[in-house]
Image (cartoon, rainbow, N blue to C red; front, side):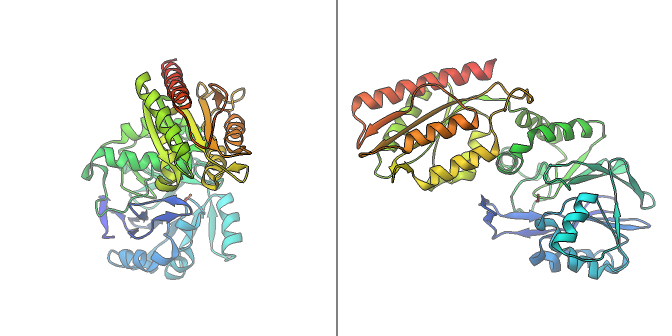
Length: 406
Ligand code: FEO
């Protein structure tokens, strides 16, 4: 990725991975970026490294601007290897650099790399002067890991936000105004749903802390840099983290011989009649990353599966485990976010059944309030069962509209 200047003396120097389409299970059809930033002042600071296969590209980009051996500070906002696995090579190329990170990040690095690097650990409010620029640190635990922090450059109003506000997208464009907003927001939504969603309560704390900062640029560790649409991405993050729902029903399913698919299509027909937004996701064809992104703002989720060996089909079982970990429904009591969400289970079987019932139990355990008993059919849904599915879809859509409007 070519370098570019965000502000006088502040450069983007990271790397693009055009061919990475599976980011530890996240389906990234548009590729991945590992952003890294260089601040050139009386002192020189590098903000974050990259994944190790791309460290030569990073060092080459830095060398096109300054001698990497002149770097005084390497700021590591986060320990996850997509940003830190290039650190050993960076620290070798920058032998006089101090490594700036949180205490928890240092613990992670001790375990990952076991190197005796010259650390300086920092906490919220700590600053380092580079000359004209001063960098300021903001600990953001669990956005995305316990070690995470953001780095703020007050005189240029740049927030280096690490994973937050990122998108998994490889493009030669570096700024949000260079791409259609819909495309960037859709990638930000996929990213939030699949990586940040379970951390919403901590995201809200981070947004509150960030609201005290004057921000003209959000420079995330993945994807394009936000300048034109900062208001839109901050507002979206607040909505997503608050678990606010749209009047939307997502029907997610897998089907062995097409019977559960007929039921899913009948349910989505009913949803359409209710006026709610409906989305149909075939898990094996469309993937769980898309399903999670569709689920993010949906007031209702219907999940269907054929029965295979008394259980749901494997993709459905895996998806429900994933849904459990993403926590799309507020646990209530100590977490006032959201108004609850509705669920529905359905599916076909031949003789013993069990798959759809298992789905129903899982949805209930995640916290979805079931709109009615599981809908099952034997071998093939008849017209009466399909009408039952249409009515269930209409009812679910109506409840989704009511929840979204509360
Ligand atoms: Fe992009 Fe949590 O690492």
